[in-house]
Image (cartoon, rainbow, N blue to C red; front, side):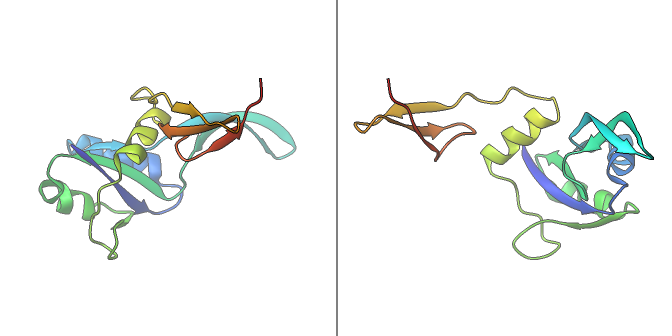
Amino acid sequence: MSMYALQVMTGMEAEITQKLRGKGVDARCPQERRMIRRGGKWQEQLYTLFPSYIFVSTPDVYRVYYAVRDEDGVLHWLGATKGTPEALSDREEANILWLAGDGPLPPSEAEVQADGTLDFTSGPLAHLRICWKK
């Protein structure tokens, strides 16, 4: 199964996600509870982590393409060519699943280099180098 990103109208992410789920589409809108100051008061509310975007998982994008595209508020599928769906990488998909609370974030693996740095080779920290001296 592959995951795809959709651009939607800002502020309608959760509503569109629910409508798509009602149509049998595996849609996600990663959110978290945050303290937000509004009107001089702090209040806890849901915050959309990727404003204007939702994520759809499907084994066959063309099976759900028109059901998703015809939903009010959906602007377009993200891809190299505007409107042409392009699947997210495995790493991006794992991070979205983790942010949506649907999967564990894979652990990062690192190698200690001769100069005392940690070189992360996999996981969400891949391609980072951290100076670590004993």
